Length: 408
Ligand SMILES: [Zn+2]
Image 1 (tube, rainbow, N blue to C red):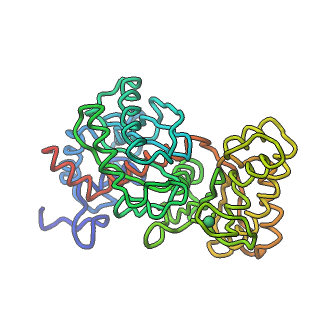
Image 2 (cartoon, rainbow, N blue to C red; image 1 turned 135 degrees about the horizontal axis):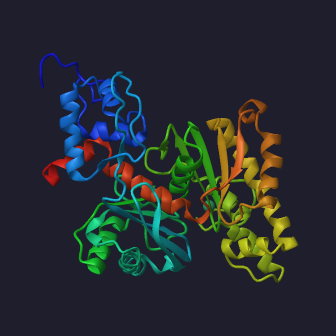
Image 3 (cartoon, rainbow, N blue to C red; image 1 turned 90 degrees about the horizontal axis):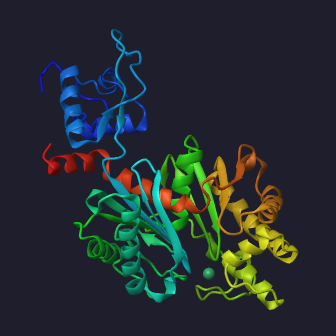
């Protein structure tokens, strides 16, 4: 570097911005021309050019189709740059208790091929993960993309995940998975079914990934976003300043096991948890007791969609129970958006939530709160999982490492 050059303002403490930081600026839309990159980083035109050349050689960046725009430095209009989202693909899967969904996605979250079907989580990881590997192989064929283009795999699971190890920790709904090496087994299943080299696997809780997907897709400016998933169980995902808030070991958001003073037995072994009285599983049990066939959150969803009056009444009651807990959540976190998602997230449940939430929470904490329903629906966790993989692999430091590995 020439001595006259100012140190980059974006790079880590004192070091000038590298290719990874430039990519980040383009991907986030904060600087999309050479001039804007110079201005944002303090790097010279020549240095910006050298770093962009590496990104072009890797196939990670391309010139935008939008045509030239005015440069912030004046002079000739500049060509815009954009992330080349088709140089690789991501695989994502979302495991529910009895059902799974998987997809091939572009790096910007477009779904290229998707499938869903029965996969029982209680059969354990040795049955479920190899099967997912087989699904991935078929989906890649369907998408017409070679397995060698896969850069990573994201997996959503219905339990608390220690993201440091990618393992689930005492998951009430995932018998046989506690402490299991999910990333290692899924990576192996992928290579067994596709013949491709191993790729990074990221595992996270489904409510976290749904929240991540929904916040980015529909509420990108919301600095404090909470999603509550009410399906067979109940969980919450919290997004603060664009990142998933997980707590110190992945336990944040596990609101299904807050005690609400009832005596029903919960799947976690305790009595009186919120999930034991207000989840899709709990509503299904109440319905079954009165002779309506229902065994899971998905069954309740189908009954609600058909306008079943008893299912609607129980869903509203469950909404009130959850709303009472959410009054505390909202008071603690002061979110801008509270999204209700999952099998029960229809009008009766939402009505119940609003009744108790506005009654119990401080007016101050709900004054600027929007209570909304999902925008991505059943794809939220897949899209969140794909985005998490991309953010991980193309984060500045990791991108720099990967560029060096590519030899550019
Ligand atoms: Zn519990």
